[in-house]
Length: 540
Image 1 (cartoon, helix red, strand yellow):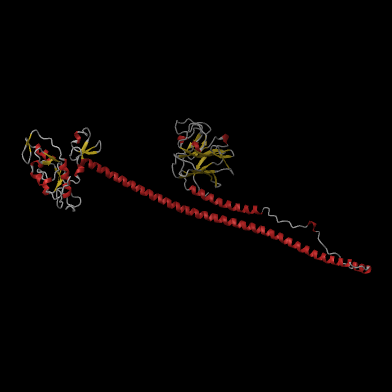
Image 2: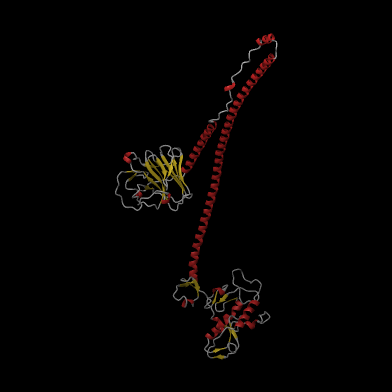
């Protein structure tokens, strides 16, 4: 098929009603072509159906079909004659769709022709009777996107059920029972929603920027803290290395001194032996010479003049004993151990002081208290009352194990508290999961949600399956409990002695943790002292 060319007259592709390039052209039986919308509107106003060009009458009203060939040619012609230069309109303005020269600014858009017109090309719509009934609106760009694909009508309404734009005909068909509102009304509602959404998103962005800043600050703080720790550790290790070097040098000097003393003794003995050998050799020469004299007189005279033999030592018991190094290395190691213990004490003091910075205010919750326990008014002390009280039923209350929880729960970060256990022979304390069973007898262990230590007479254990027995050096006065929720760490300390008792590591916490205290029975008065939540004194 030959393509349309700009050398063809524009009249070959123009509707004789609207004088514009065909839009959905149809052909009458008399052979004339019109825009489908134009001829339809023309016949809607007539009693007789005739051709607007040759006045040929049609009975009945023809059912016209789009001329596909002419439609394609008209579309090609419309494309070929459109000016390639920039339209003579400002940004944001709608250009005329009909101008074949410089495109002028459109003043109206026809919703029947789907075309925007400048004042010149709008003239037929102001002159031709059939076109006067076309609906003209303010200029619209991309009009094809604003039209209903099914009814070829402007999308003027909004279906709130299906959240789509619809035309008036849609409301009588597919969206008949759906609530619809004018586009402008929905636009205003959605604009308000969008404003709120934008504000919310902006706030979320700001919150995340602040979170990034906080994380970056934390990383920077952690780097500085790590640098300080490395520096502190370097000083400690340097001191320890110096101590080891000193002990090694002193040990070497001691061994060398003992070796030197032994060597001096050996040298003196050798000198003495060599002198005796020399004296004995001279004596041997004299005796040998005399033995060769055969004259009896001369022999006897010479024999009587022989000198007395030189004095000699009895060497049978004389020996050089190897130096004894017994205790030398032990004494050096004892000195090193003493230095290490001093450094460890400094380290424990620093560690405990660092943990004490995370002190939290803990008060005991009466709603969890076992009926045998008695709390102080301030919620800081608990002891066994010896008899059970009648208390209101409460799902939070312990009914089997004689225990009490704190009011405060912790689900992130680090926290530390101290409990005085002075004058007690038995107790249990630590932290527990929020969901522990308070109504049944259970085995205390991390698997059951308990991270606790227990003193019973002279035995101190971390409750696990099996239990972990802990060294008990002296009577405990106060126990410190440190928890790092995020790192999964629970540590126990002897506060007075500054001694680490035990740490449960690699724990997984998925719910709040609560401090737990259990004072045990008063045991005839020997264990009647209370457990006391004590304020942290970092100068201890």
